[in-house]
Amino acid sequence: MQRYFTDEKLSIGEIFKASADDTHHMKNVMRFRPGDAFHMVDGSRDTFLCEITSAGETVECRPLELVEEAPELPVDLTVYCPLLKGEKFDWMIQKATELGAHAFSIYDADRSIVKLDEKKRRKRIERYMKIIREASEQSRRQHIPEIGFVPAVKELSLDAFDHVLFAYEGNASNPAASLNETLQALSGGDRIAFIFGPEGGFSEAETEALSSHNSIRLGPRILRAETAPLYALSAISATFE
Image 1 (cartoon, rainbow, N blue to C red):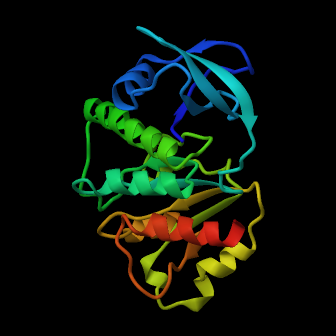
Image 2 (image 1 turned 60 degrees about the vertical axis):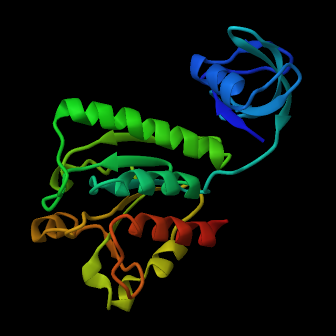
């Protein structure tokens, strides 16, 4: 069933108006008519079964019942990753959203290939938010991950997290740094920062800056920068869900 998000707090039986973007999608893409049903996630992350009551210039809708569901990962994982070449980053955030990432933080790595000025960053964030929102709707989530730019690795503020992990390719042959063992020590509700390197890998200075945190081995193979976050999210899902 088609899903949308609103910042409003919905109540059963109380009519609300769809946003301009959702109105366009409902009328011109889904071809909804009065009586058609869909899911709407409100500002409290509650999911409602709704019906179209009017499909004029603005679509009006009525919540019919609360939908009981729990689609979110039991842990909140923020993906820290630099920008990647081409459309790799777009693809990664789309798939990571489908896999349950809680948020994305983009940092400038010493070996980053892609670097943007402030104006281009704002445009990228707009594009990324559209990708993330659509992926959240498609995967039937109750939360739309946030995304933004943060300082370089050496300047990151990570005190708000219960665990800080970083995927270090130097651990590929070190079984002591197993992701599986690390995940066994986590608990539901934990806030996790997982830091992934650029296409050229972490620099020595970045590795040193992260040395006080848990460096993790993502299996015995070296993964591409866009693959590593998906590997980690899949492992977390398999462990907790």
